[in-house]
Amino acid sequence: MNFYYMFIIQGNKMNILVCIKQVPGTSKVEVDEVTGVLKRDGVDSKMNPYDLFALETSLKLKEKFGGEVKVITMGPPQAKEIIKEAYAMGADEGALLSDRRFAGADVLATSYTLSQGIRKMGDFQLIICGKQTTDGDTAQVGPEMAESLNIPHIANVLKILEVKENSIVVEMDMPDAIEVAEIQFPCLITVEKDIFQPRLPSYKRQKATENKEIKVFSLNDFKDKDELRYGLNGSPTQVERIFPPAVNDHKEIWEGTGEELGNRIFNTLKHMKFV
Image: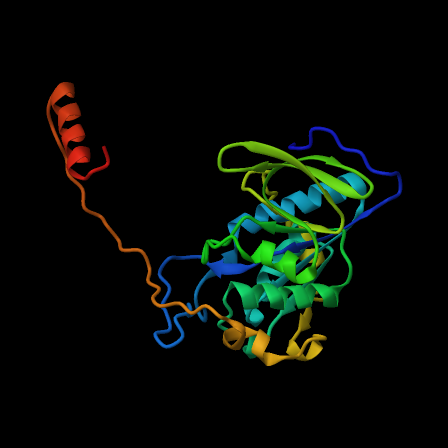
């Protein structure tokens, strides 16, 4: 476990929220030529892999200190499936933000929408997000959510070192160093992969929670109902072009002595300007 040492006042339970997202389970996804967004209907989907590490972190904290773990996601109705997966892993409550007016949101509109959904769900000591999503890779939504909620945040958390009554001490991965920081509750952190090894969903828990309620919120449920802050209307950035990665299956088979092959590899890398 990535807890070095931990301390919390006896009887003080943690109320934790985890942000999760449904992402395509394949790279073969079509793109809407008009809006520049992914066509997700009919595409095999899964929980964003980075969010599994965030969820596992929350469950470890719940096991150690008690309290509740809630999850929230934004997407079409089929995104309920990842909330069911979270239930099977141990989450206590989940909510889906689903409204056509949320569609086509960039990171700013997405983070604002999630922040409004979080306000609807209640108060939390700790909000945990995965480092980024595999379909966007911006790593911006977590910190922008924290700004919308007006709470402190720390990104790229490698380890949780200590949990105190009113704060948490973490180790974060910076470009040139590893830093240790203490942050006051309520706060938001984004965690790196492998902070904990995610557990497998429990079949027994899956059967026990298959009819468990999933709350669904639309724009009409939010305090701020200004449509200009959501979806495409609330997105100041627009995607110029998006495309799946090109498939490159070219291969060559070389034969020769070790010295000949070594020289050939070196010359090839030099020609490609890798060295």
